Length: 274
Ligand code: ADP
Image: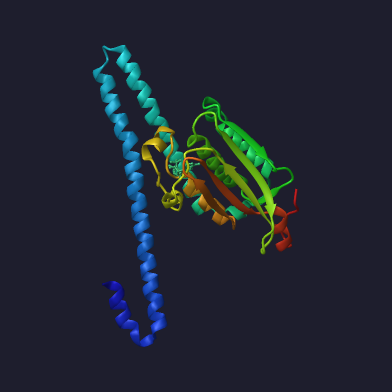
């Protein structure tokens, strides 16, 4: 189609240029398709709770002479409203991590504080399932980056570990420094004894809105955006997130981020390490 027509027109300019142009077009199309899919997904995800809310409000009006039914419908409306709120919040978070340059407000961030904050965020859901959370090795480690974004990323990993684990299991968070050619990295690993993720799904879970089991994700208030946010934060900080998992046994998500001292040493203008 269009790509072929372009290549025919510029063919005399040399095959390398043609190849670049064709690749550009393909990439532009891919980006456009991803954007379209994303908009379609958002619309679909918004329609589920808003549709439910509109049906439930009708049901409440019809049941005005049955207080028990009204209470029941109102309870379900609350669940749908929470779902909608979560989704909007995660969409805002995703757009923020995609649009802001996190390194503009980068600073040395204490790993023990990040971990404590993440544990705090999931304390309530962990305690209702009697899941114990334990952290180790975090003392004296500092990563380089945007505190808010890093907290959101680690918070999502811990939240998932709790959500996708059965009752009375353990979630462990450990940190350590590892040597790397470009400067030391800090590795933060979140390990659960949960349902695990099959090899086939492991790559896909980082995609926006991808869920292994949509019903289960929705039941726990999941939006399918958490790991996309984590992946984006890791990459924009010059790090990465990886997953190891054994189905039915559990998963480990590992965040690797530049160490604060290592970054400071690379650029003489950086602020002092705290
Ligand atoms: P969600 O809001 O659905 O949790 P995420 O982007 O955080 O969205 O995760 C995507 C999917 O990856 C989840 O729906 C779940 O199927 C899977 N997943 C994420 N974390 C874990 C985990 N620790 N154990 C098992 N499955 C997980």
